[in-house]
Length: 76
Image 1 (cartoon, helix red, strand yellow):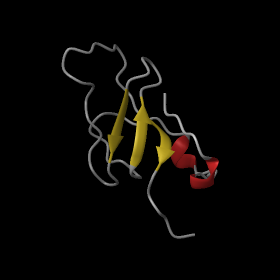
Image 2 (image 1 turned 90 degrees about the horizontal axis):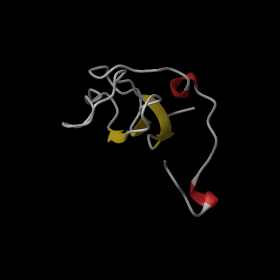
Image 3 (image 1 turned 30 degrees about the vertical axis):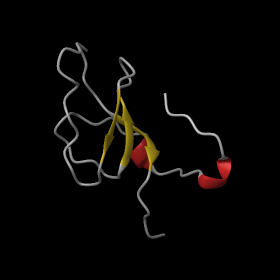
Image 4 (image 1 turned 120 degrees about the vertical axis):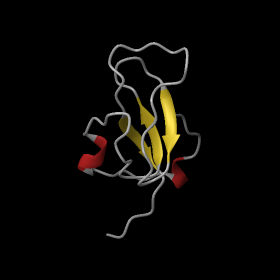
């Protein structure tokens, strides 16, 4: 689970990018931390790069990704 200590460096964002569920191989809409809603596995990905499969040796019946923390600076 993503953690933080100082809220000074965080802001809320109500983008629908956080609501969508992505498949391995989809392009990441933003750089950040993605979490599997099924097993809790977390990975970082860069914007426009393909989201990875789960790590070797890790079995999850429904490999998916959901953006939980965005690090991309986007224009308003």
